[in-house]
Length: 196
Image (cartoon, rainbow, N blue to C red; front, top):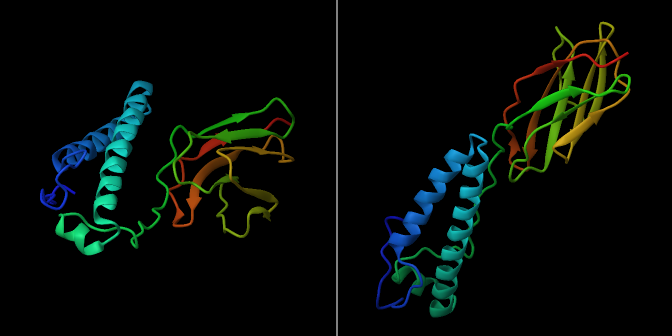
């Protein structure tokens, strides 16, 4: 958007100039980077920046659409790019933030969780004993290899409870997020030993 110049004869009363829209983009990018640290105030500032970005772009898009009356040539002549037929491909999820695993008080039980990620359709939770390689197969899998079990749980929630696992056995637990574009990177594994 920074390279576009709105033609004043085609769109004489833009609610927000290209310069303002470009500044909105830059501000949102900077605040998103700051929010990735997990700082509460940085996340709140990012949400405010998102609201301003959405309002400014929606106002401008509505004005351009109204003046152009859906005519793509008018939109192009005005210095904008028509997007009615364009879609943005879905991006694979990013890395999980604040992935954590804790033993529950119940026998053979633990839970894993992370902060929510935008655009995620589900989360795949893995519980793998030492020395075992996992092969993905289905939504929920329990594989026994050399007397050891592997637990794989795919869920649409960012928190998952594993049940009926062997107590007293150390498991390496990880998770990755998935959506229609694919899967994100796995969280660093954490060890857990469910109670017997």
